[in-house]
Length: 322
Image (cartoon, rainbow, N blue to C red; front, side, top):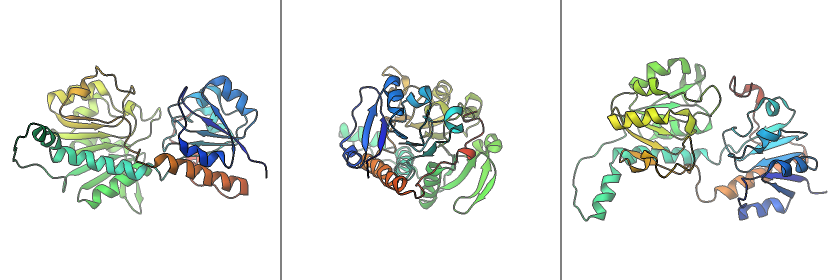
């Protein structure tokens, strides 16, 4: 059987990892990083693999005649346009690769602040015997925004270590694993009750700026914020003001409005902020796992059997693409 043509969309001038050798063995790979290349490739291929979700090529060019689009992310930022959602193209994502390590990162960040690890490391550097009592995460109440794959992993892991977890989604419902999911309409009521707030929402027109200045002011005094969703979900200027005032005690941020975070940004120099380079899900081996998932789906596609990680385009958040 002839090997299928597969478009791989990367950022301009970036280099694909060696993990793509596994795809090269089963497909004719057409690598594109600009609009003209993508348009030419679409005339030759039915399948596109958006390797870097930060690429906006598919949003700009549109799906043309593509029959299947896979994004190397849990979120669908690169694909949420009316043209793509309304097209016949099947959409899949990389669920299962990034969620568990992202949950581990959230737990690590909460422990980092509770155990005052920054001060411990600084004391070690100066050979200072700084004996003191530190906090615990057990019994703290956490509000997890987003009951999707990432939020689910976070909520379950945090409960396993003794935290009290409330989950907020678009609408109220009962979940077999998570229990009661509160509707977004209750967020203003729930924020003042939380010791920690974890943002794990997708970025859509509905959710952009969901943690704005008014909601940051409703945080419980001394609470902490963790953002592993997308930078634009949080008003960074308002967060900066609340961190400086001490109303919000600390923030662990893996995502930012502008990435890379500019070197002159105040977050870099703040002791109560943990800055991470959008890497909470990037464990060693993630590239091989991501490519392997796509290769497995390509085999399923060739054999005409159901794909893994199908996205229900009819169930995307209201306003996400329309």
